[in-house]
Amino acid sequence: MRFAFVLLTLISMAMSASADDGADLAPLARNTLAAAVDALAARDMPGGVAHVDRMERASLYETERPPVYADIFLAAWTATGEERFRALFLEVADLCVAMKQPEGGYARKAWVKQVGAEETRQDRMTFRNSRSLTAVEVILKAYDLTGEKRYLDSALNTAEFTLAAQHPEGVWHSDYPAPERSYLELPMLNDLVTISSVRELMLIYRYTNDPRYLDAIRRTGQWFVDWQLEEPTPGWAQHYGWDRRPAWGRRFEPPSACSAPSIEAIDVLIDIHLLTGDERYLAPISAAVAWLDRARTGENEWARFYELKTGRPVYAAVDAAPWLRYTRDEGLYKGYAQWGSWPFERRRARWERLQEIGREALIAEESAPQTEDQPRALVERDAEWMRATCSPGGTLIGFTEDPGKPLTMRMNVLRAARWLAAAAAIAAE
Image 1 (cartoon, rainbow, N blue to C red):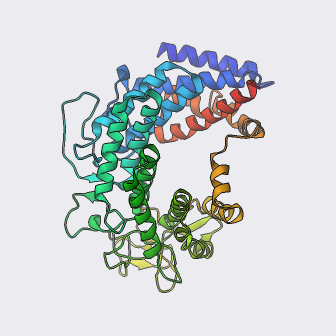
Image 2: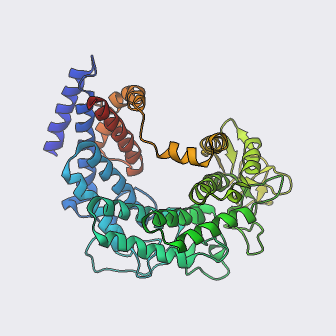
Image 3: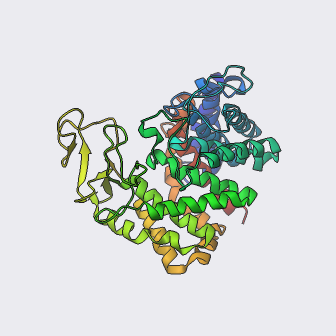
């Protein structure tokens, strides 16, 4: 703690020295970021050992925690070049490998608690909240970083499970094995179940060029085409019965058109088109975009659920009859995001850009390195945010004393790391 206090004092002094002209902002930001991540590691990974029970408040679910920490440590290493952050990232990647169940999937709770632990516990595997995808992303980053084949083998083992779990029509349900007569065995878009699963296969395909993965990706694209809802709500539902009709999930998830997964469906259909060149996967997008545009409940807000026959937004009540209501009055179920701001405008802008310039040009545009003016624009745009973030009362400085929620810290560390990379690019000119 004395080291953290001394470092905090030095950073505060550096802040006051550089406040006038900002000349020392990059060194200050680098030191502040390093101190914050060191404090997080000291609290949640004592001795540098990744242990899910020590990874506090990153998420409700144990198997969602390690990828949050992996992002923080990898960004810190990229931004500072400090090898200790690289080692911490690889420790978390090893934990992601260790948590994988023998079948290849990831459970709702951790399969092992820490790297090298003997303790194991069986639990249903699930694709909810991108559990499988985010673990595979971490493991493949470790493979890219080290070239160690064991990481690639682990990711391929998970991909084989994901491939085997896909329904022949191209969709996934939530849990494996799923309880009988439960919504967990229904085709599901909720919690990114199908979307994160197909994205995992798209990622693995880039490493393998295995045609089995491409076939599975095409099946998912066709599923979105075939199961799109009719007017006046031509989006997609959160859950479906095998009769292709929207189905109940939990009691506050009615059969309805659903805005959030429909917005994500637009993006994944564009990606499947970019990968395959097949125009048929674009067929549902225009109607879905038009519906989402007119379904707004605010300037940048949507209800989650929309009545199929009328297109009106509906909200789930707690226990009152009827369960569904058309207004946000008292008595609504509060433990669930029944309305919110989803990333529709970004998805629509990408769709419009594809229509404007075509597939090949969009692929080139999205894969192109930054132009010379982009680092300068980023540095200028975020300079005040960086200065405030690194100030004695700022977010990152605060983390050296109280690391807080790692989900919030990840957002700030990634943003700071992007700023530092842009500053370094300018300095190298």
